[in-house]
Amino acid sequence: MPILETEDLTHIFPEGTVAIQDISLKINEGEFVVIAGANGSGKTVFARHLNGLLKPTKGRVLLDGEPITKNIVEARRKVGLVFQDPDSQFVGQTVAEDVAFGPENLNLPVKEVETIVKESLEAVGLSGFSSRSPHALSGGEKRKLAIAGILAMKPKIIIFDEPFTGLDYPGVVQVLKQIVQLHKKGHTILLITHELEKVLAHANRLVIMHKGKLVEDGKPEDVIYRSENYGVRMPLNDGQKVAALTWLK
Image (tube, rainbow, N blue to C red; front, top):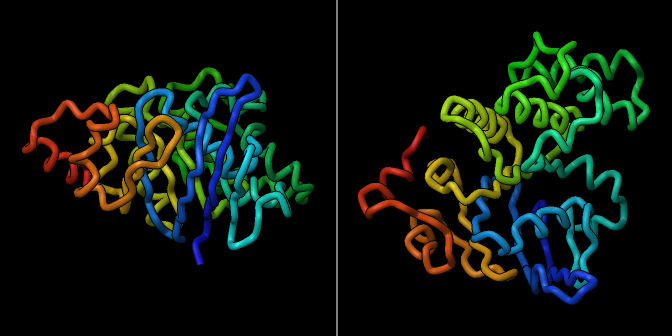
């Protein structure tokens, strides 16, 4: 049974724009799935349905075989979403307060929350940053803090929405290594990006969306050669495409 599944997922905005249409997708536990598509293809709208941040016009999302509407709080704990803009995700005045926010809202004992915060910050390499302001961190550090906040909820699935936006090369490497490490530790990863060369070496599947529809789903080495048909920028020649599949592997 898939850990996460969508059935005929459709979202139509109030003014009539069809954002996504009839998307049926099965994600198995432990997979690393890259979701790509041109701007406006519906990737982010789709992702925000997976933990109930958006409600579908039609269709449903299943988590462990059950509709997420059955227990939306539990769904948001098990399916963590790291936004493209990490600043929009921060709620605490300090790094430690921000990571503690989720566990505190689960009414966990203070000592347990403190342990979770410590472990989450250690996991992303931010142990010495507890008293810092989230907004004073570098771009890469902000992404890592956003990941720590998600880890504090002990999710099964982590969704990353354009995690490399605005990062310099060291920041990209820093965040990518963190994502790969999370996958190795058993988390199911869904990563939305248009920078395919950075992640294809680690992905089990490449899914492409186009004009709100799912148009490709398969092994990265098969799908990548058709990606440009759907406006997914691949400024690489054939030799570089092959090299992209082994980048940082």
